[in-house]
Length: 150
Image (cartoon, rainbow, N blue to C red; front, side):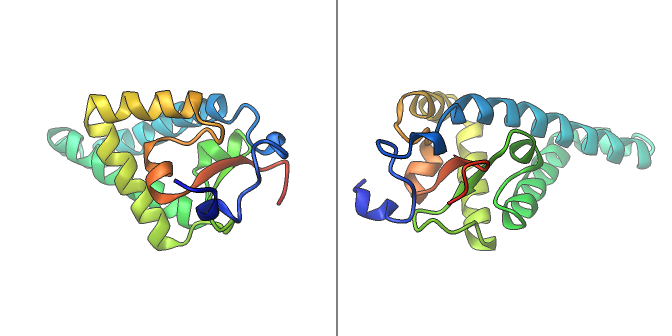
């Protein structure tokens, strides 16, 4: 991918503070988000008097998808990302809109469904100068530190 597609994002060579510790923060945010989705699914199981347990896998997929889309579309970050002071930005530097949030969540969900894409995504996050995962590279998005405002 060329740098032209990232014209709105900070240059990692000259503005490295935007990308400092982002892969670690993304990992922590992922754990927080997973616990939040788990709590939501557990709550649904309880309020359905256990019937939701029969559909727990499906509930996990739906609740997780909706949670990510809604939080990404309304602030460009999940709650876990907000707690770790990072947010996702499009290649033009703008925050996520609903369409980008859906595409990013779909890419995330697909990569989480298969081992190799997920491993590749983690390796990319740890080795890429912008800390981008597989979905980020495809969409031209990147996670940035929120404290360092653009």
